[in-house]
Image 1 (spheres, rainbow, N blue to C red):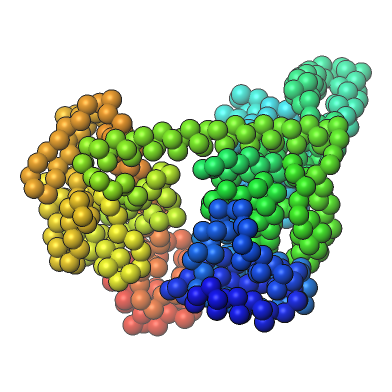
Image 2 (tube, rainbow, N blue to C red):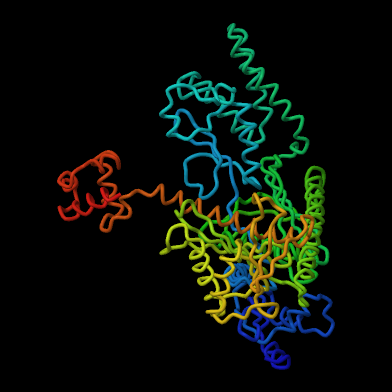
Length: 615
């Protein structure tokens, strides 16, 4: 649809809140936005003087407009986030981080509570402390808590079946409640102090330990007094290091750094006055965008997209602090209130400890941006070196690499990793579970994986790469040639350029040989940037393949033999296990004994017996 026709549509738009979708010529959604007034907001894109390169590039591609009127701007914001999450428009800022944050978990409801790492739905009875920015931050905290309070971290099954203390007791990381080496009262005290510490109530912990140490000394229990003394010493050392924890609060602090070619949004997590750590995001931003505009798009994605899915959203702080004044802060606060049922303050002008948190987040954002830009520059040099090596006129925009992993032919998995001009593009990675081949036949596995991958691409389900790397020598490369030829995919510099990567003597890095379809081979110097890029994508394909293989192999080995028997569902499996007391006893049973289980007929018992003994 031409510009004049678009302007005709704009003239008919209502002065009401809603969302608008900008569509490309092929019908794909380019951008989704929300507006207080659809007419005013959409019209602003088509002004003669538009300074933003992002807006100029977007308008040049628009062929159609669609709008949805909503009852309020808040409702429009929620609908906008739903559409961005499902459609993933290229001109919106996309938050590619759907993982739930990790927490420290303390169980409740038993005599000997445990403390543990937790990620996922919070359905168990107990207290959850967090969120922490990474699993490393949680494990560091658990390690510190072990030294301070020695609360058990083993799972309940291990705890119930211990007959003597484990190594954690020997190295003074646990007080061995499993074998009664600590009283229930003392253990509850340790658990209480652990909770207080995680809540930032360090002074209460200190007072409690001093009181207990004094009582133990008066009772001549000097060994116990020494335990409390050591806990006090360790706690005071920790407090000396925690210089930012004086102002109690539950806050998320956001800072943004932006330069042409890159953006970094840094989040600082503060819970109960304790800085849990930081996390850096580098969202996909098209063109140059002001920091305030970046945060205006980023924050709804950060808080609302998770809440609109089945996961239920993020742990919500009492305050959100931004390094720049946030446009539309009131609308975001209203949307958060609707989704979470809680109020949250959004502010940018803060003082004292909160200002120090903003400064810390900004320093980290600036450093993250510089690191990201340097890394992209490094990658760009490697891409340029490979382009020069292969004598390509056009820049390399997309590369794919395949690898095969198995253990003696078991659970064969093929991986496909993708690199673009910014490095690994993990959203395009794929794994293929290889079936119906002779175990250990790497050629057949490669042929199957390539056929499945490029059959889809030929149908238009993705983009063909400029270069296709195959981890292997001439044999694997021949499989790739056959597959692409069968599918009618052109090869060479003008199509998909095929390269086999054969490992050198002793499989040492730097001794690789590159094989080409015409029979030529190249061995590069160990310090070649082009070789480093090839090694990087090859190693990533290997890592991705072996991770998938191990997951598939472990799953197969953990799967009960009963699960593969037709007619034996979850209810019958449970009945069999409960009747005989375990899988080993089921395997020892005769068909006649199996038929005595409720819900198992004689014919099914014969089937189960035959299946178990065929294994």
